[in-house]
Image 1 (cartoon, one colour):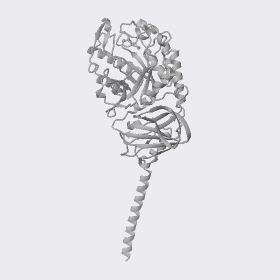
Image 2 (cartoon, one colour):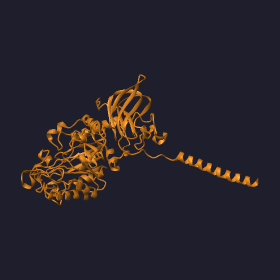
Image 3 (tube, helix red, strand yellow):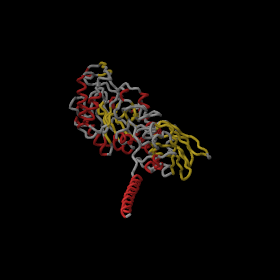
Image 4 (cartoon, rainbow, N blue to C red):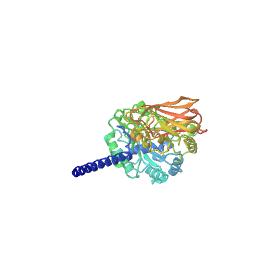
Length: 503
C-alpha cells in the first residue's frame, strides 16, 4: 500500500509539471509578438523608400544655353559665353529648402558638352570661361550649398555630347566614364545620377558639323556604366527610362498615370526608346521596383529665357501637378532654371513660395486623425495590425488583413461631421504595392454613398473631390494582389487659394 501511494505521488508530480509547462507555453504564446505581413516578391530598397518620402525635388538647368537663349546647344558655343554676373548657388538651395524641396539635381553637362566643373578630360569647361577668371567650379559650389541647407545633391551628365570629336566611337565611352568618375569621386555623396534618352543627331563634334547616330541599345553599354556608378557611390539612385532605381514617367508634364505601379520589367525598356505608356502606368507584374519620377519645368522651357518671364506656372498649376505626381504614387521633379545673373528669377521664387503655402495649409490638419476605426477583418485580431493605426499619424504603423484575404472594408467614425474635399491613402510600401481597386463612401442621410474611387495607391494617393460633409466614412479595398494593408488615411479641407479643382 505504501509503495502504491509513493507511485501515485510520483505520477502526480509528473502531471503537475506537465500542466505547468503547458500554462507557461500558453502564456508565452499570448505575449509573443506576431511577425509582419508577407512581403511581395518585388519590394523597394530602403534608399528607394527614403527617396519617395522626399516627394518634391528640384532640377537646375544651367549652362551656355542660358546665355544663347536656346534649349539645346549645338556644341559650338564658346566657353566665353558663360559669364553669370551674380551666380549664387546658396540662393538656389535656400529657395529650394524654403519651398519644400528636399533635393536638387544640377546639369553638370548638357548635350552641348560644356562642363560646369574643371574636368581634367577636356577643355570645353568652366575653366575656359570668364567665370571667376577660369577658377570657378559650379558643381563644387552647388553641392556645398545643398549640404549647407540640408538638401541632397544630384547630378545630370548628358550621355550625348555635341561638342566631342569622338562621339559615336568607343573612345568617347572612355571619356564619358572618366567624367562620370570625376563627378562621383570628387564631390562627396551624390544621391541621384540622371541619365536621359537624348542620344545622337546633328552637332559640332570637335569642329565638324555633321549628323552622328548610335545604336541606343548597345552603344553606351549601360550595364557597365551602372556598375561603375554603384561602385563609386553604393547608395546612389540611378534615373533612366529603365531605372534601375528611378524611371521617367513617360512625359514632361509631371503627370503620373491614374494607375501607377512602382514595378516595371526593366528588360522591356530601352533608354531613349522606351514605351511611354508603359512607363506612365508601370506594370503590376513587373520584376523590378523602379520609382516613377515626374519631371516638369516651372516655365515652358527647361533653360531660362527672358521671353518666358510672364509664362511661369501659377501656384495653382503647380498644385495641380503635385496631385498628379505625388498624389499618384510618384515623385515630383520640378525644374527651376537660373537666369543670366545665375539666380532663380523673382517670379519663379514667388510661385514656389505660394505653392508651398497652399500645400501646407491644405494638409496641415488631418480631420480623420484620432477617429474611431473598425475593420471587417484584422490580422490575427492583434493590436499590432489595429485599424486605429491608419489614423495615428505614425508612418510606420499599419492595419492589415489575414492571409488569404484580398478584400476588406474599414469604417472611420469621426467625433462629429466635418466638411472635407481631399482624401489621402497610403500603403506600407516596404512590403510591396498591393491595392489595385478601391473606393470611398460616406454615410449621408442614413445611407452609404460612394464619392470617390481609384485603382492603385502605393506610397501615396491623393484625391480631389466635391466637398462632402459627413461623420462616417468607409474605405473599401476591392482588389489586392496580397494581404491588403494601409498605413495612413486622411481627409482634409483644401486651402481657399487652391481653387475648387476635382479629379
